[in-house]
Length: 168
Image 1: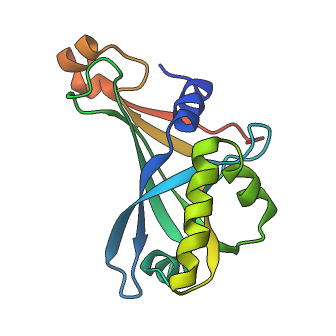
Image 2 (image 1 turned 180 degrees about the vertical axis):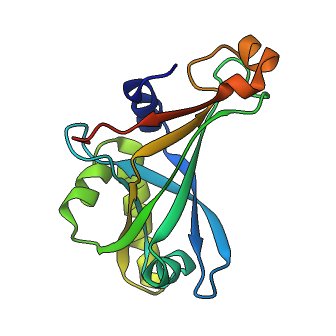
């Protein structure tokens, strides 16, 4: 069984995931995004930088329900399907001046470059903003904490779930 700390560590090592939202008509819309994570001593929240004119922002304003999937590649066997962390949650749009989102995007050189790039793109239309995604109490996993061989021999055993601690 994989622990929350193990899953959180894997989630923090990655920066790419798929955000799924619902359109105004209630149909699903998925898009790949670069994300940043709140500080380790704060509630677990993912932030994604975007512009106010995007489809995902319109969707979140219409329906706060979202789903998020983070692939966790296998370092030595990249051709094998990755492990994964996924969750359902609530998304909100917050302004470019949101302190926690800006702090999350300042946590690494790569995320600072992503934010700078997004700030340059804003010139083409829309205002910079962040999508704030708060997971529900459970993170679902696939293949986390198990070897590739064990995963191949028992793929159903690769399905897992981890509760987010109450203080997170």
